[in-house]
Image (cartoon, rainbow, N blue to C red):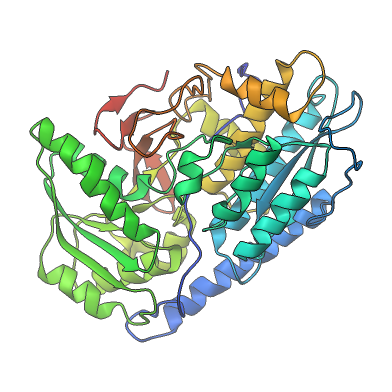
Length: 451
């Protein structure tokens, strides 16, 4: 798998979910805070576009041979597709995948590629449009040179993508789960727990520190709303079985169209919870955090490291951020994370770095190692068969070792192969493991070793 020199297979959640149903939230009725956030998100879009141009990629530009058989000929580049979105219709998570994948491709190609062949990424831009995701999927499977898909992130787009991939036998590697398709489709081979880990992971982390109560903040309509259901279905019952009772009080679900979050922050502060879990998108999380601190709440606030990059917290809140914990999907103190940062600095120096990058980065590394083990013709079927044999895969301690030899026994989540998170502390614009390379099972609260 990964030799230490080649251990760049590494470390998003990163989950940044595009906003739904209305304008971005405003802090206390003021547009100042969110204007700054919008500028930074536009910067991400600009940087992502620059990354694409630098790599010479063309969105949805395919060159299939027209035959019905998939396959990659010896000597030709080994091609995979990444389906995601850029532009104003999306938020960071979609766009962060691109530099992560490019960094991995560049690192592998710089050392001779895979079996002497270069890797090639074809990118298809959905612009955040669900229907366009289906078009991208159809175009991808029509290109017979494409033997895998890596790092897709499409809010609600899974219903359009994965049925197409299933018919074509195209594996989707390093996919961050957002909806049901990502947790159930037989073509999915994830490296992280997915978005469901936001809320469940926060509860598991707080319970491990001895807390038995926290406020839970989310908005509706949103897939984040289902995270509350997951907490009540999986995590709290598991904690109760081992004598660690936990309750969410208060639980505040506000409309997705809300523009002033100060009222909801005031309700939270009035309840005086020992901790606050923010199951929100990036702009809303920072806006709500600002409102909590302005209204005098000094307790810990827990958010998703993938949804809200540490650099954005520092830029917007500075020292007023206060005590923040984050739910991470990868260990930030692992050898794998250090190699990931080194490759990003070398090959994508102008791109923002987030856990979302890691989904695609690690997905590319895993794909390359699977291809190395294929004897004979490189086809989609051969890639799928290779993935099914992956057992005890070393990610450089970014995650516990990965295995895809059998499906998960977690009810309703057959493709949940890595149900863990990392409890992170925020400090001055960075996240670090609270306990180095230590993982928590989000459904049971149990500690899982890295190796």
